[in-house]
Length: 440
Image 1 (spheres, one colour):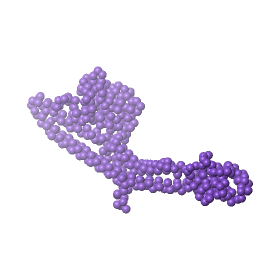
Image 2 (cartoon, one colour):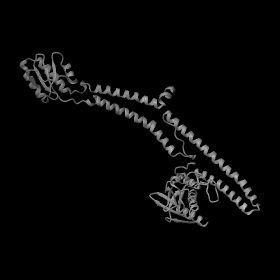
Image 3 (cartoon, rainbow, N blue to C red):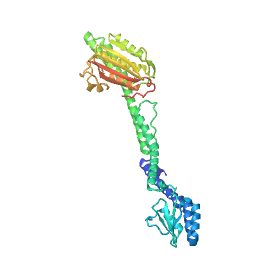
Image 4 (cartoon, rainbow, N blue to C red):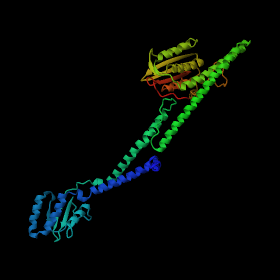
């Protein structure tokens, strides 16, 4: 039994073969039933056919002088049959008999000749002595459609499609839909349930491979995060020692350059760790006054002598992770004031969609570079060296990771006449428990 199950029941090919066999058995059962139902003795009207057989036999057995009375009595008893005597067999009888006439001929027996007439349901019976009777039978009330080839084919198609559709819905559609949903909502968060491993053997193998792949990716990202976090932590100790030692450098210009380089190293380590944390944020989503967050960011930059203005409503509450959202907007504003003379932060809430735009008057980004600038460690400066005014290529990547963690996205477009507009689009109320953030 286990061998049969592994070869047939657990495999898609075996299940399809079983369905074909089941469909063939079903059509044979339907054909057998339809033939049994459509047998003449089951569906022929007995009061017409039996009356015609009885009439022919009685008339044939009676003397010729009494036949007229018998026919008159039968005509009164069965007025719809139109029983009359004819001098001879009509010349325009049907060349071929159908199954009903064959059945009636068998009932009449030898010596009688039954033929169909051109009129609907009309027949002629020649008695053994040569006299002819004509009658009109009622139409058959059986189910000829079920017994015909068209009806049988339709029933076969319906039964086959029903079996195949049921199997596809239960064995294939549901597991494949779950697989597509799991792939679309792929997450490295530990609270996401594994993909159910059910269905045919091939589907179960794909689900098992998907779950193993997610575990491997999770371990890889965790190992990378722990490694870089350890490196960032361990680097702080020698950097701190270097800062202390640089204080004893007599040359003031050299000391300032050393301190600037050390600050750049710390900023680089902090930026990498922030980028990794934003890929796996554990902050809880809550109701946030996004206007308050944006005004706070604007005030922080204004305190450092930058021109940053806010434009938008006075209050707007959304469901978000406040610290992550603040970091994303701050990164966009930092890019704006670094490359332009001033920045404008705009907010618009419409139809459940929140749009946060950060606009600057800088040189902008060429169209062929916009998408690349959203990737990690891609900088706008063409020079490979980094000075105090250059970033590390993480600001836009962190902002996009935060937007995607809230179920939104980050896009870049040109400002007229020059400059750049970075736009974060978020769902107003879908961030709580939203699609989990993906580690980049």
